[in-house]
Structures are given as structure tokens and as C-alpha cells.
Amino acid sequence: MNRRRFLTATAGAGSLAFGASPLADESPATTEPVIDIHQHLSYGGKRDKEWNLIEPGRNDTQFLAHQRAMGITRTILLPSGRSVLRPSTHEGRSNGLEATCDGNERCYRFALEHSKEFSFGANEVTDLPEAPGEIEKYLKLGAVVIGEQKFGVDCDSADSQRLYALAADYKVPILMHWQFQDYNYGFERFYKILEKFPKTNFIGHAQTWWANIDRDHIERSNLYPKTGVRPGGITDRYLSDYPNIFGDLSAGSGLNSLIRDEDQTREFLTRHQDKLLLGTDCADTLGRGPGCEGAQIIAAIRRLAPSKQIERKLFHDNSQKLFRL
Image: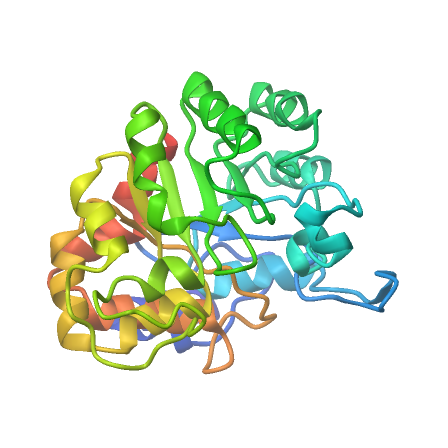
């Protein structure tokens, strides 16, 4: 059996997430389409106290190999906003989405060069006066989402609402990073925005979003709770009560939500099977093994999805519909 047939066979046997990694120039080792709605270029670098880059993030060759090793057939690249020193970027700490991620032009060019496998989003620091114009520039070029919005602003600020209206105008979703005391303040009152902007599709992501699947989540500073889940938390209610909000299963917070109470996870996936989307948001370079959160998320969904039909919705169908891919 040659290498390509071996990779395809192991993927079909359910070991895709932890199988051998294909080379960067090989096609994805999967027989079914899989969409990853949340990834970044140059992810995982480090900066000094003056925010100078001292260690580069993942390079493009590593990134391509990573996505293909996971079996991803289409990836959406989420750009950062520009680098500025202001309260909404925590005086620079949040530049590059707090992870040295690349911006609009780089994501656009990369997606253009790899159009069979990549789409791109549009983003900018929320409260910059030029934010709507910068985002609209890339929406006109084909961006399929606004975000990742990860800035220190009130979720119902006038600046935020300009972007919600823009998303509705261009019929693209807007992806929100919810993190207590850091990003998009006011999660508990976001229902007012969902009601005010019924034509805008929102995607919830990150620690505060996933911690609040539990109705007993009271300690808001606990971003990765490990206790069992009682249905009816704020996030659970948002997904149930509002047709215009969806959930991004990416990152350590998404993984934690899947594995902290697996019995409740199966019920949660069933209840919200039309509202949940695979994302990885993973800075790993291999795309496999226990060190790769993306691979772990994929493996958890395969294990916990109550049916193959629900698995396919999470891996592909919901995202294809929402992003009109």
C-alpha cells in the first residue's frame, strides 16, 4: 500500500486526528469534506515588553501541513486588526490577536494563492474610526466573515454596532471572542444585540462563551471550569432562543466544553446540532497527537457526536450554509 492509500485508509478507519501527517504538497487525507472556520497565519510567535517580535510564529509550510494532517479541506483565515496602542488593544497587548497573527492583506493574499483550500475574513480594531471602511474593503474582495473581533470594548458599544450592521449588509457572520474582563464586555446583556440585529449572524467563541453552557457558572473569572454541566446556561439559552447566533467549537475553551461532562455534551450536540461549527484555532505545527488541540477537538466530536448525521453537520454542513461556501 502506498503512502496516499495508507493515509486515506487510516482516515476512514477513524484515526485521522492522530494519524501520520501528510506532506505539505499532498491533498488532505480524508474522504469527506471538513471545514475549519477558525485559523490564523503566523500563529504562536512571541513579543518583548515593547511588543517587538522576538520569536516568529508558525510558518506557512508548517501551517499547510498542519491543516492537511487534520483532514481539513477548507479553512477560513481570521486576520488581526492593525497594531495600535490604545485601551481597546490593552495598549498593544492584544495586537495580532494577542498571538502575533497576521492581518487582512496577508490573509487575503494567502487565500488567493491557495483558493482551493482557503477562504479569508476581514477584521479591524473595533473602535478605530476607519474600521468599517477597512473591513468593507476586504468584504468587497470576497471575505466571508468579520473577525475575529477580540478587543477590549463593550459588546453593545456604538463602534461594535457599526460592524454588526455592516455584517448584515454584506450577509456575512461576525465572530466574537468572549473573555471576561478582557474582550467584548457585557456577555450577559448581549441578548439585546441579538434582538436589535436579527439579520446579523453572530458566532460565539472563547472562554466566557463556553464556560456559560452551565447554568451554575457563577465565578466568571473561572475560564476553564471542569465541573459537570447543568443545561440552561447563558450560552445554552442564546443558542436555543435566538436563530442568529452560532457556536465555534475551537481552542482550549471549545475542547474543554466538549470533554468536561461528556454525557451532557452528547445532549448539547443533539440540541444545537444546527448551530455548532468546527473550528480549531490551533497554533500547533504537526496537526496530530495530544499536543494538537485541533486534532483533539476533531477526535472528541467524532467520539461524542450522537450520530454520523450530526457529525457531518458540525464538520461541514452548518459552516457551508452559514458562510455560503
